[in-house]
Amino acid sequence: MDLKFGDIQETALIPLAIKASETARPNARIKDFKAKEIIDTLGVDVSKFDPFMSHEGVVARTIMFRDELKKLIADHPNALCINLGCGFDDKFSQVDNGKITWFDVDLPDQIAVRRKVYQDRDRCTMLDGSALEGEWTKALPCNDTTIVVMEGVLEYFSKEQVKICLNMLCDSFPHGYLLAELHSPFLEKHGSHHDAVKNTNATFGWGTKSGREYLELEPRLTFLSERSYNEEMKKYSIRGKIFAVIGRNINNRLAIFKW
Ligand SMILES: C[S@@+](CC[C@H](N)C(=O)[O-])C[C@H]1O[C@@H](n2cnc3c(N)ncnc32)[C@H](O)[C@@H]1O
Image 1: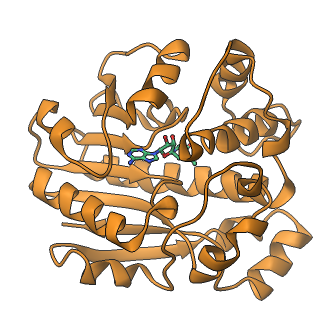
Image 2 (image 1 turned 90 degrees about the vertical axis):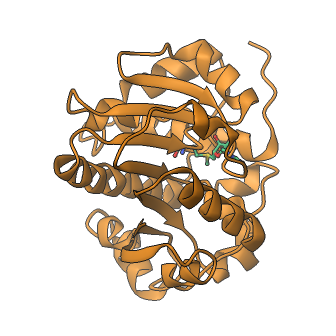
């Protein structure tokens, strides 16, 4: 299949490659059979997108996002859930409780590719939309609680774009939670050395030392928690253990906000 990806859109191949290769391992920590099927159907070469540290980071974040999301859904079983910048991710299958309403949202060209490998399911719908403008949110059903997941998306935004996104979410939904992947100022500066992203044309945007820096951009947000991927990565390898010490403040984090 002849596919053209935008610079940030192409980065969606990184978690896809890693989830497929991890699934094929004998003691797979995450299982995502859909990822392998997508690679085969699209016929994309993802061999350069699976280096060691990114692999461990994506496995860690997949586990951490899934577990936090499951907890939130247990508290809000009828929530409206949005995977904003969904790429090829299939988080709905991992967390569905039979009641949530789920939207997979991404830029129109990315959703067009996604439609080649996914169909809308009961309570799980794909939608064209951007994190930088809110028109698409008007198509969504009203709900008391909205849970927005942004995994591997805000890292590519400037500070001004992060502000636009946060303001848009708080303007569009009366109450919600945001589960967001954040990265450090170190990665913002040295992103050209990132072992997987260096193989794309994407560049990292504004990095933070703490998710609390988001509160200046959107005062309606409350900061709930933040955990480094080191917490998960150090369980599995010597390199993960060492990185948790020397890279204590530079690994990506899962931050949770409420408004
Ligand atoms: C690294 S991928 C992550 C994909 C997915 N969340 C995952 O973890 O597998 C980044 C995604 O952000 C999407 N993206 C980039 N800019 C966006 C925007 N303004 N609005 C919505 N999605 C965007 C890209 O199209 C791409 O799918």
